[in-house]
Length: 204
Image 1 (cartoon, one colour):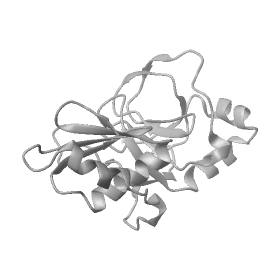
Image 2: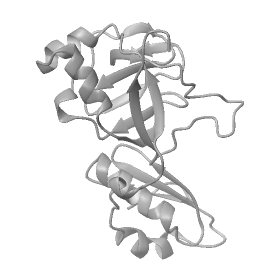
Image 3: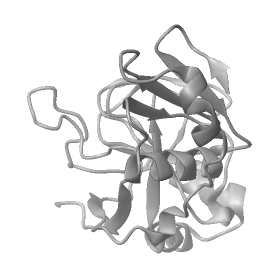
């Protein structure tokens, strides 16, 4: 546990599953005075109200936390209608040694979990994918990836919330709005949210 300014501490963990599990444990039973819990790939930031608690008081409770398994969360998953027409779908098939139809099947056969939000507002890093679909980033990023592109990189899956540069492998696209600053909430993808992809036809 490391100090992070005067009103927060940073928990360093051994990987994304642990960070996600600790964040879930904190959300379900937050210590008094905790205001915000922000998971990342291998850390969890815990922001607190200094008039109600201190880093020293929180320390024993935070360090004793045991990660909770995201698979135990029985809340309904967000369904992402997906057209599998990505420019890198055939390349992903080559990288994995699978037929493109098998890539699509495996991608839609699992339930993902939002580990954290990063890169851009609404860009959720989704974990829990099929290990066979772990692929490297592109050697040369694209200068522009369209909004709604569904992509893979390393252990993560993601959906580009708006047109932006990007180096992930594009396997499809969705019409689901993953970030709308005028909406409440602006994204359906809070950390811990379960997500499933459903294959749709090109007109979906």
